[in-house]
Length: 176
Ligand SMILES: CC(=O)SCCNC(=O)CCNC(=O)[C@H](O)C(C)(C)COP(=O)(O)OP(=O)(O)OC[C@H]1O[C@@H](n2cnc3c(N)ncnc32)[C@H](O)[C@@H]1OP(=O)(O)O
Image (cartoon, rainbow, N blue to C red; front, side, top):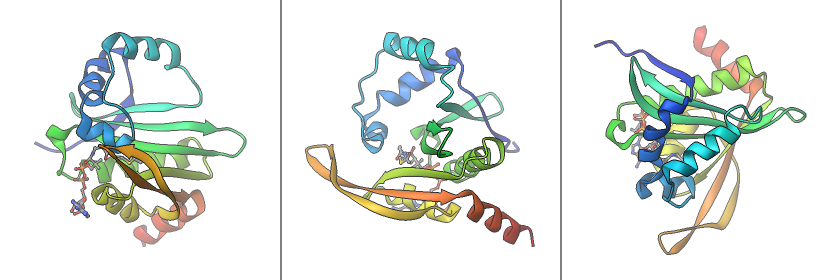
């Protein structure tokens, strides 16, 4: 079957998929969050925030299949920056989907929203995620030492960023 990866808007019908992801500690630890989310809370958050102009929340799909959740959060109109975050469903990890989804989200941030800068925070031990971000062009800006408490110990975070100008240069180079 041919792969047709797309980012589409998060819909209310996707909340059971999010419920499955947000209650998985293997996933949520890397989002520096507790894996504790009721369906009611998800619905409440959705009703309150689905039209929040500061966020863009996407489901990564291949046809009708949901593969992951990708967000551009805290979109700043004045400073023209936003925070990127991603989860690929553990049932679908290791297939190259995160790399492709990150590229789609980066393209959305710069080509659609005209952001100046996209940033993220990744756990220093999350080598798989860091590898993907470096591959797409994110660069480390600094470390947040012992900033996150996960599984009984403090973890360092790394802030990484990508600028729109570098993204244009990178894509121009790839097309040559
Ligand atoms: C800003 C943030 O959102 S940080 C938090 C990111 N989210 C999470 O960690 C939540 C839980 N984890 C996940 O959702 C997924 O594991 C993700 C998003 C990190 C990765 O998703 P996947 O679909 O499995 O990744 P994908 O298959 O696209 O790429 C994995 C890459 O990492 C590489 N890789 C795998 N293990 C390692 C490792 N230990 N060290 C370095 N690279 C590794 C693979 O070789 C592959 O790289 P390649 O394409 O150059 O060969």
